[in-house]
Every structure is written in C-alpha cells, then in structure tokens.
Amino acid sequence: MSDVTELFDRQQDALRCPYPIFDGLREDAPLVRDEGLGAWIATTYDAARTILRDTANWSSLSPTSPGQRESAMTDAMMILSQEPAMASAFEKMLSGRRTAAVLLNADPPDHVRQRRVVNAAFRPDRIRALEPTVRRRSDELIASFADRGSVEFVSEYAVLLPMRIIADALGVGDDDLLMFKKWSDDLVIPIGNASPSVDQVRDFVMSTQAFSDYFSDKLEQREREPQNDLLSDVANAELDGERLTHAEQISMCQQFLVAGNETTTKLIANMANRFASEPGLQRSIDDDRSLIPSFVEESLRFEAPVQGLFRQAKNDVTIDGVTVPAGEHVWVVYAAANRDADKFECPHDFDAARSNAREHLSFGNGEHFCLGAGLARAEAHVAVEAMLDHLPELRFAEGHEPAYEDSFILRGLKTLHLDFGT
Image (tube, rainbow, N blue to C red; front, side, top):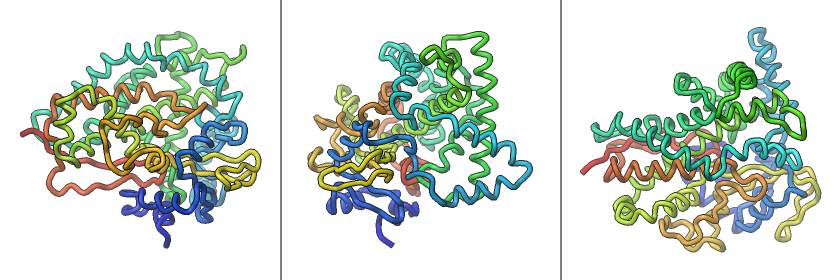
C-alpha cells in the first residue's frame, strides 16, 4: 500500500502527518495522476493557485469528490432507498441536490450572482460589529472551565465558539446548538471519506432531511417577518429580479452552518495544539501581542483545516508541462501548496513571524475565496487572546494521544486534552 493510498484509506498515521506524502508527490511532478482516487493531485503552490484562479478552464461543481463514481456511499444509498422509512428522506435529499448548485459548488456566472446575495453579511464593518459578541461568547465558555486547570478543548471551546457565532449570525439562538452540531457532523460524513458505513449514510440522509425541515420553517418565518440576520438575507434575496429557489436557500444555509463552524473549530483547536506542542511559543506571543495576526495566519498555513478541494477540467488544460484531459478531476491540495519550499522558506517550521504567511491557500484563492474568511480570522484572534489571558502554559494532559477525524479533506483533532496554569 502506497503512502497516498494510506491517506485516502484514512489510516491514522497518514491523517496525523500527511505532509511527507505531499512532499513525495511534489517531487514527482506538479500534478500526479492517482488511479485509486480517480483524479489528479496538485501539490505545488503555483499549480494550485493557477487552477483556483482559472474558472474558465476549471469547474467547481464537484468540490468535495472527483465526480460521480461507484463507492460505498452510492451503494449505501441504494440499500437505504429500499427501506420504506427512508424513502421520503432519500427522495427529498436527491431532489434538492438536483437543483442547487450554490456558492461552493457553483460556477460563474451563478457563483458571482449568488455571492452578491450574502456579501453584505461578511463585510469588514459587519465583522467588526460582531466582535463584542464573539468576545462575550468566548468569555462565557472560558468561565465554565477556567478554574479547573484542565479542559477537553475541542468539545468545551473550539466547537462551541464558532457554533454559537454562526447561530447568532443566522438568527437561530442557542437552544438547538447540540442538534446543529449533530447535523453538521453528519452532513460532512461524505467529505474525504469514500467508504462510509450504511449507518453513517443513514445519519447523513436523516440529518439532511431534518436540517431542511427546520430551516424551511425558519425561512418562511423570515420571509413574512424579516429580521436583521443572515436567514432574512437568504429568505428575501433576489437574483436578477427572481427569488432564490427553496433548494438554493437550503443549500446556502447548510454551507453557512457547516463552513461557519467545522473549519473554524479546526483552526482554533490547531492553535491550542500548537501552543501545547511548542513550549515557550505561547509566552512569546503573550510578550508581543502584535504577533497574534501573523500567528493566526501561520496556523492556517501550517495546518489547513480544509486540506484541499476538487476541480474538474472543462477543457484539456496544461499546467507546468502536465496535461489534464477535459472531464478529469484534480484534487487541489491547499495543505501541500502551503508547504511548498519554492513559496515558503523552511515550510515545515512553524514561524509565528513569517512575513508571507498570509499568502497561504487555506481559504482557497480567486473567485471562490472563502466568504467567511474575515469572520474566521476574527474568531481565531479572540480565541488566541482568550488562551493568553485565561489559559497560560497550555500543555498536553497526561495520556493525551492525538487522533484526527476520519477524512482526508477535513483535518481536525477529535479531542484535545489540555492542562493549563503554572
């Protein structure tokens, strides 16, 4: 079994440290074809950035997998579709998917038009207005464990902060946070996992239906009585004089919920993990807090929460001497591009003062640059300040063993047991 196959099979050793695998691929060529994945893999910074910026030649319609292919996911769906209790949920999920290419999986000109609907919610002034809420939410979470001297950081802080903030932004409050987290976890099951179990796929389908039912009601309410929140923006948005379809509205809400918490959760946990991994780093950032922004950017470069997404060639495309035939997919590996020595000096060293860290590709690049990047950065900045102010000398608790989530696309720690205090 090759190293890259171990990664796609989600072996823990490969998930824990995929970077030597990416280095080996990059040494072979800027783009390498992998038959097991059924796609090409782009690992150099220049190749990745070129593909991400070229929407004329590359499609985003299937960003989380290399197209429709036989897999455990499709096999499980066939099994589940025969169950009477699942038939309604299965049909509802498929009908929505057939009609909703939205934002992440939309191409121009639809993508540009759709972003105009929600751009205002993520303007810098709106993000700044949210910062007091982010700080208040952070303080509430920290207060629940600050006196203990220990914390399971993922579940007690890194999950809850972004989840509460995206709930605030959507306008749905705190009452259903555990349900939102369950839905979010289930909705990402197919991402970076080509062999989910039948039970996992059942959870995916049922959560897709439950999510749709819940937010359908909320969207109807906001259409009748708009409020100052993201749900109202979506419910009342028009594109070229036409309202968004119901499927487009639901897909937008799904992306806001998932992208608004999954990736930021991973970023915040990665930063705490970095402090615990490098004794003295937290103190050095505390001594010079002007380094916080660059520490956040270096954390994004060093551990991309989304390791990479797929693009499909619309035409025969040649990148650095390698031709990808029309119709084939490329996994654009942000995490590999972020550790390309031709772009970042000593790329495997964490440097909180790295001058070009912000040029990482962890938020993508070009037209599909992450809509919520400003909010993620604001939450990360608040989280770092909270760690400096209230969780000094972060270190791994005795017996902590890092384990990563079961995905080669989404990179995040399942748990992070930490002690703190002098």
